Amino acid sequence: MISRKKIFYPVTTQLRNYLRFYQREQHLPLSYNDLKYYSDSVPVIDQNGKDTLWETVLYPQAELDTIHSGLKHIYAKLKAGGDTRVQQHLFIERIDYCTFGNSNPFRIKIVNKYNDVYDYFYIKTSDASRIYGLELEQLLSPNPVHYLSEEDTLVEEHISGIPGDQFLKLIPRRPEYNLKRIAKEFVKFNERCFLRLLGDMRAYNFVFIITPDFDDYKFFIRAIDFDQQFYEGSKNIYLPQYFKENYPFVEIVQTHLNKEVVQQYQQEERAVIARRLRAERHRLRDLREVVWNEEISTSEKVKQLGHELADHYKDPVFAKLKSMGQIIDRSLKQVLVATNVS
Image (tube, rainbow, N blue to C red):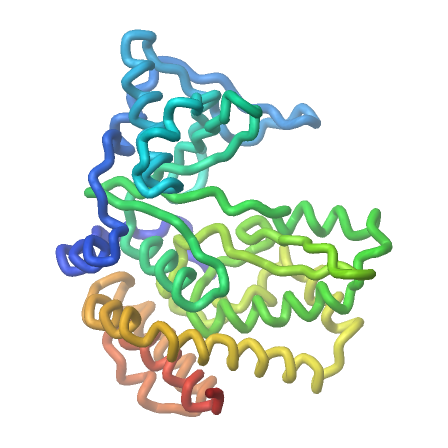
């Protein structure tokens, strides 16, 4: 069972030095706390008239220019390497605040005034678990993820795609979608989350990216929430197949794939991760040195996960490990041991 309220873990000096070395830690002109002092807010209602649990926040006119200028500068750092010339043709259309969840993020809508193309980015409270999740997404998935950090503030790019729960509603209306390909991608995503110990991948915490491919469509799933990176004690929390919100995807897998094909796709995903482990071994070594003894979960959860993985892998060493950093290190080594790739 997922903890009702996840503990926030501070970014330690060692982790901050790692972020600075890899240019994730940068000076930001605004902090998360600066955005909290809004004067008013109005609910954000979706196209069906339902409350989204987001609020559009309003600031005093005297502070608005400073806030908008700072946000445009942050976006330039996030997306343009700090080139402030891009700020000249950008404007902030809206700042929303999320009233639920662990991170209570601010969502910034930024628009190019020349062509009205818009983008989003998020400003959140910094948390070590989330940063480790973002780093492992960068290193072990095929998708680069852009984020910046300073003190208690974390800036994340928007990851585009169709949220999994909305995608499920779309499937019956799109008979051209190949359900076998959807099943294949869910199997791979399930394996990817488990191997890197990314938890709480309920349908609304990942998105589908759809790409036309000759006479068919390809599907890829990306995580969009990294709060539950190796924090919980139950191994099933790291397997998306066990969340009730994902049962329709499990049913698609059971209907369209047999056991042998599922095992093939799992092995393919392990091989991909094994190659990335080798390609990123130097940065992963630096990350390992930071996380090895860090306190990023409770001792009870570390003990539970260690024993459950010891049973899963038939490897008693897991049960003797003392931190989540040691557990993720051994979990990833299991991939290398079990996969012979060049």
